[in-house]
Image (tube, rainbow, N blue to C red):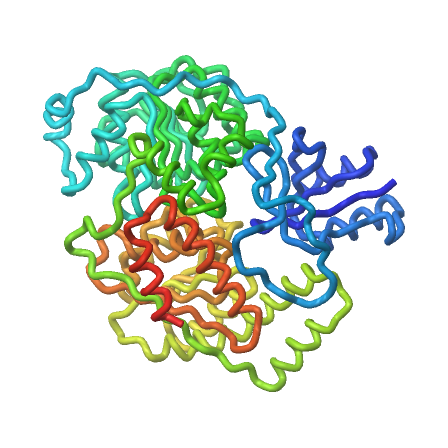
Length: 541
């Protein structure tokens, strides 16, 4: 009996190997999802944790477990491939070379319900303009509403902070004509969507997380989609917020989303980050919309559209009528955003601890996690010094990757007499909203501290004009989402993003990896900004 553990770049582990009921029980207990395409489990947690559980509970020997030395990514068809086209993080040791070519992608024929093809609607520009007259809109928003209303399905991919929610609510309200609308959101954003709908339609009847035949709007999080499949035929419109969450067809919520979409004529997709790592991530969204190229097998899609700037240019042309993306330069009052890296020199004690971890004989991904935690602890004192330099009118968001850092920063703020609030994944929706309201409304609450995974998406934190990162995410899209909690509509000041980078550490490699991925995404969805983006990034390092 042998098992293989493949650590994923976006977190978690792919567990594959010989079938054993005990291994299945461990995977389920660790909130695992079965991937039928690869006959494997995607498990939450680190490779070392999964390995320890297998050894302790099944009595396995070390040679019965293999942990891959290369970060993997889960492709849209459920297959696993080494991360490519980006700078890698080197921790030393042997790394076996992959035998797959860069273009080799499997097509496993994963079943997803057939979705109606995109069609143009009967609505004209004049009819839509008349319908939106009564709403308060920014100059760029009517075009976004028209984009949604003139197609049965489309992607609105505006930059974060341009009001995708408002545009989608108005479009869905007009299109539904009194019939129910299903809104699919992250659990943490349910209250935000409820508030936005009531701002646009004050008399709306809204049901949260449950089907109500009398409701005009039903808001549900991804994890509960399965409960709504049997009611799908009741909805005139489905709105999918943060639609990039559906890039993995093997996930249960993706399958349920397709089951619902197959019975809903109008499907509006929203995301500010349609591409996080690879072009293939668009494939499932195109398929969900009923776009013709979404019907291509994934391997054919990648052969035609992935791997080079020329192929990506072809893809842009194919999806130009389906995806509308505007940048923040459409907001005349937005003052801009600057990224600044801050060099950090480790003390001798910190350097010795860093080197000790590097030389340890633990698995390289365990070392990687330990190094990132160490560097985040180091940056707590750096960020405390940076906060001391802020003016009394400044407010700052502090993003961490680890909850321990959130607690340490809170203690520093309390010691300094600075008002602060925190937000982590275990907080309830009410507690989260209370922290956000306090930061936005209380002038004495000057610091918002949160884990990037919990606080980096969907919230409006425009009271802040500074954003500090103690740790960096694995993709530029996640970094942008976090930054744009402050840099969005309603922000009247320049937003300064400070990124401490420890000298002669993995920090520089991770930063380079993010720039590589940013170049790929810009090449596909924002080609006109490529030159300026490269220049801006170059000026920060």
